[in-house]
Length: 254
Image 1 (tube, rainbow, N blue to C red):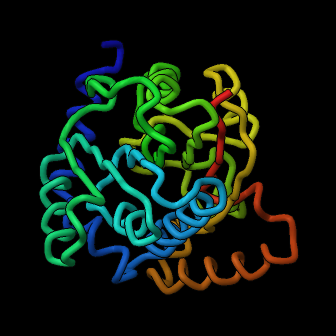
Image 2 (tube, rainbow, N blue to C red):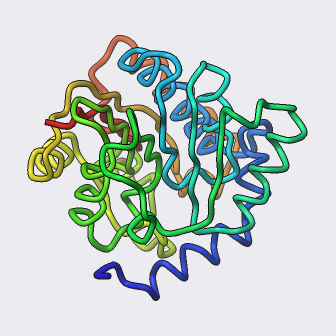
Image 3 (cartoon, helix red, strand yellow):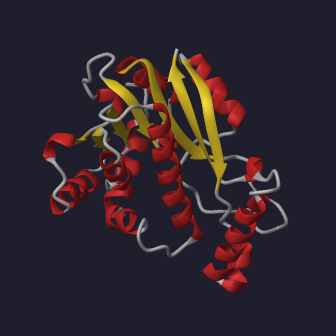
């Protein structure tokens, strides 16, 4: 397997340690980033409903604590969630059991996508939010997606953008802490990656404005929330999307 195992271990440890944080952030916004992640979920599930019929079989790759999977099931789809973090999968099963979700509508398993033995063409759609950005070999991951998704199936994928508003106006310090996320994206880069691996991008959405770190030194999270609201509002009538922090693409298997 060409994916760097050391990096995957780092990702696994990070999400094991922060599993409860990831579950809670969808309900208790402490940072503007939390709102962006919640919006990412809502936008992506809306795309799923737009391009696939109910009862379609969906793979939630990197399902985390299951908050996206919960929405997928509640919209009438079957979901198979996978994650390399056992703690995350434990939370998924606990949450779905507590919510008394019909067990025939979901299944969760621990594992690395590249090692999972899924039959070819076994899913109608794949949700991969905050997933591709952690992969050492994006092409290997996308080829794996293409193998297990049916012809005409829909892949919904997100990633952090390389160029964003917080890079400007001295609102972001030159030196920032190292992230376990190793890939960043633009619409053109996503289109190139998808085309090279047998997918065609048919829709997309840029969203989220946050991480204005220098401002936080003076105003704390309130400053970040304020700028998030201002730029989100402005983006409804000004072309600010190309400087958003996150991008979601919808691609179809060719």
